[in-house]
Image (cartoon, rainbow, N blue to C red; front, side, top):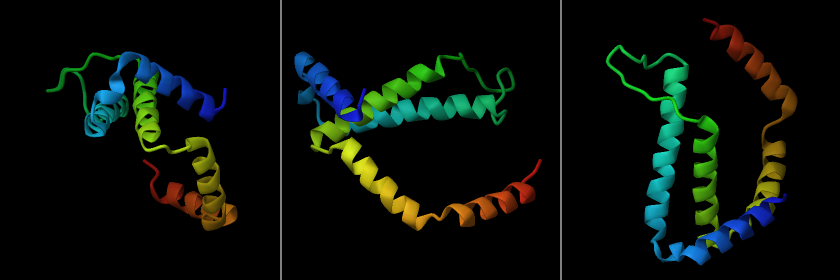
Length: 117
């Protein structure tokens, strides 16, 4: 499935339920909430927060959190008539020119050497 197909499915889903009546600001806040849940998952997984040591956490499905955040991101893009597939392809083309492969590989090799645990 192409991203444009996903955007259409999302648009239809939202319109069928009348959700387009919610202001974009609320959709954005909901998106940030879902991103926060992804962040919470990561902080526990990496040990920054430890269950039972002052933190309480119920592990939920990370894939579902990503899907929820993606869905809300798509809703926002649709509200502003942004063709994400087209814009992503344009951005990737610019990033390929801006971030040279060999330069970044060299940098990342040095970075990982400096930051070994």
